[in-house]
Image (cartoon, rainbow, N blue to C red; front, side):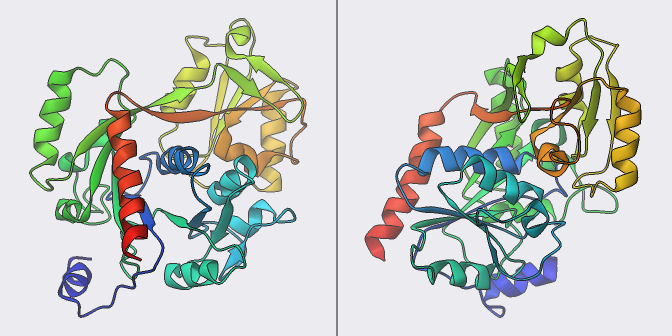
Length: 325
């Protein structure tokens, strides 16, 4: 990875730029930093202003090459996270392509081509020269404390942070002090002089099924089965349980492809009880489990402070690109 980055930095390997603003969201670690909620935050910020597209690799999908989401598209065509974007934001363009250069080229050839493109999990995809790089690092696993695999959990060395335009420390406690924010910022600024922001995950007070919604507080005296197939599921599990030890937990690997045996196991373990899962897992489990049993918990990214400053950085990048294109 270091040699590859050096070749790109020197221009010996080519990076392709595009005439529309391209914003890349990613991380140095192997995962679990909250990329999907951050992409959704950007969608909410931009979808009313611009014709917007998201482009992902489509991890775990059963297709190859460029796939454009339509009303007939299935989760297995896109992968769980892109399908989640498509389901929640049907008015935007959602596409997948393991070759991001070809993916963007195909998007720009559409009759209704996007004005802004969001690249999901593309920090290391250097064949595209994005206009802005948002680097995420989780509060409880800061990249400044980590090492490259197999010793640690980083895809590349900490020095890769210098390519960022902004750093967002995700999954922070809501009561994070300014003193600790300053201390973390100082450590991050050893590797990059990019501005640093702090965000947290907020949970909806309701759980949703295909047919209904219920308040999480209504489950205090009820026993449910919690199912999760995401990286670092413990915060989700703890939030759903809220001290209720009557809930049972069944965990699977991140991006898990649920088999028929897995579905049978879930139903047997549930014993007719409600099944509570993450929004990402829901797109893989819906239509395979009884609609009246299966509920999911939506989450959002919120900034602890200076949200308007972050938004302005993004909007300025887009405006500046459009002014010079």
